[in-house]
Length: 403
Image 1: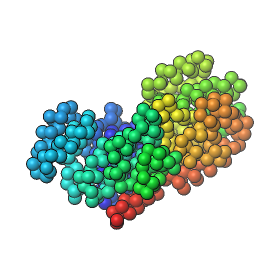
Image 2 (image 1 turned 180 degrees about the vertical axis):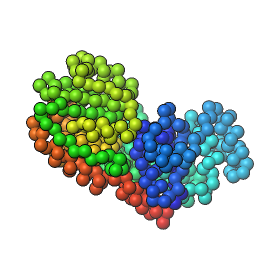
Image 3 (image 1 turned 90 degrees about the horizontal axis):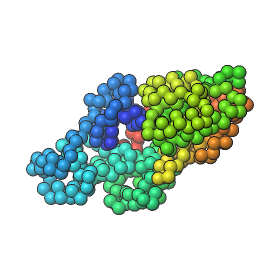
Image 4 (image 1 turned 90 degrees about the vertical axis):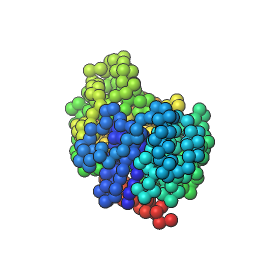
């Protein structure tokens, strides 16, 4: 099977789950081409990218800053394949039109691909013209979180329906039931929806069960982008509260972003700068090591003022695979992937006291950590193994092609 993955930026540090999807399909013997609107700076430097030669499988759409440049490329294509009137219909798409025009050079051959699969709603909306260009090739789109939740916000309402986006999609995948329900709220017809979580390679996360002794330092870690929905400011405040209660602890924060200076300031104001270490962005391999070194993973995700939310929170599956119980929130699709009081502990959003209570639960019940770790690993292996999910993805494609 020949599959075109349509992305905005590839390979990206914060989008390792797309890399995993590509690899799972390659392992099943399929031919995957990644078509990206650009290369991130810096690109994800994960070993899997090099091991599978993913850069060589990626086509980057030429950057075109003007319609003139796009039309020059498109006219050549039109003379060989299409009516010149198509140019007029492309122009109506505004700022996305140049990229769409340039893309034709790699996408015009109807025999080149069996399936188009777009990742994230805005990217899918940018590429959905392919459904009309090649109606015999299924157009699949996966929606991950913000791409649905932010577009239910009053300022962005009808983001998809006003361009008739849903009419161009043969199958719309939500990564959680919660996201699927949001897709329905955004106007997606229920009959074209399904749910497929994003997965991890459990073998990349060595199972190292946490074994906490109350006489030692309690080690917590976060590894995420420093954006509002990750809730790190509430984690810092909760850690401060636990520390002020007499618990010896340390907190390592990996990742970076616009809010990093604010997090440092909050830590300073809370008087726990000595207990918190900011280590910046790290490669995927180091994420696993950080989790192995910690007793608990904490990331109390929240809904931001503009409606941005998590979709699934893949990092929580990574933590459970490693044997590091996550402490997070009853937020969006997270409770589907972290079972409260079984594989992790959840608190209401922005409730610092409850977060502190969940940390202290393990301080007061240290033997519970080892039980949580084994249940968490089993849970991830059964539901979030990327190879098993890749097989399900293959079945989805085959079902569409058989219609």
